[in-house]
Length: 318
Image 1 (cartoon, rainbow, N blue to C red):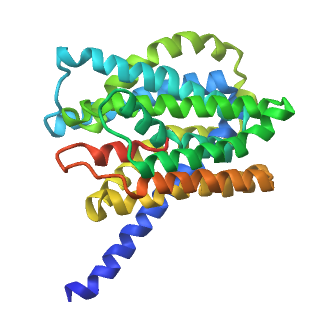
Image 2: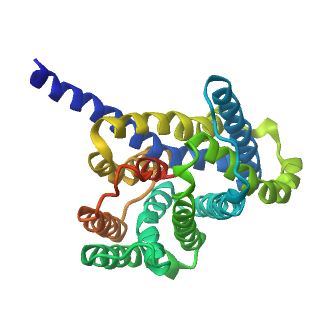
C-alpha cells in the first residue's frame, strides 16, 4: 500500500514545487507591471515599507505562538552586513535593473547568484571550487556574453538593465553567504525582519521624496494587485510551500525545479509584454542554464546540520 502511495506523494510534492517556481518566475513580470505604474523609486519605497510591516507582523505572531530567539549582541555586525548587502544593495540593483530590461532577462541574470556564491566562498577560503563548478561557470559566463553583448552594442537602456541585474545577482550571492551562519541560530522570519530593518533604513530615507511625486489616480487595479503580489506571494507564500517541498523530497530533487524560474519568467513576460526572443537571446539563456546545471550536478550537499534548505529556499529571488 505504501509503495502504491509513494508515486502519488512524489507527484503531489513535485506539483507544489512547480507551483512555487512558477510563482517566482511570474513575479518578475508582475514586478515590472508595478514598476511601470508606480515608478521604480516609489515602488521600491512602498515595497520596503510593506515588507517591513509584514515581516514584523509575522515575527510578532510567531513570538506569541512559539519561542522566537532574540538578537544576540555578538550577531549584530553579521546581521548588519547581511542587511546592507541584501536589502541596501541587492534589491535596488535588481529593481532598477528590471526597470530598464525585460522580466526574462532580469530573472535569468539574477539566477546566476549561486555561481557568484560559489566564487565568493572560494575567494574567502570557505569552500573549494570543483572542476565541474569551474566548467559550469565558464559555460554560464559564455551564455551571459551571448545574452548581454547584443544589448550593450545597441547602446539602449536594456544593456544597462542587464548589467544592473548581474550586479544584483552578485550582491544576492553575498547576502546568501553572509546569512549562512546566522540561519543556524535564527529562523527565517526572524532573519528577514532583522536584516530587512537594517537594510531598509538608508533606502527608504533616500526614496521617501519620490512618494510626493506619485500620482495615485494613474495607478490601476492591475498595478495595485501586482504591487501586493510582490510584497506577499513570492516571499511568504512561496517560501512556506518551498520549505514544505524540501522537507519531503530533499534539497537535491527540489533544486532541479529552480531552472524553471527563468522559463516561467520568460513565458509571463511574453504574455504580458510581448517580449521578443531572438536567436542570440535564446542561445545565451540556454548556455546560462546549462552552466548552472553543470555546476550544480556534482556539488556536494552539506550535512543536515547546516541550513542548506533555508539557503536554497531564498534563491530566486526575491
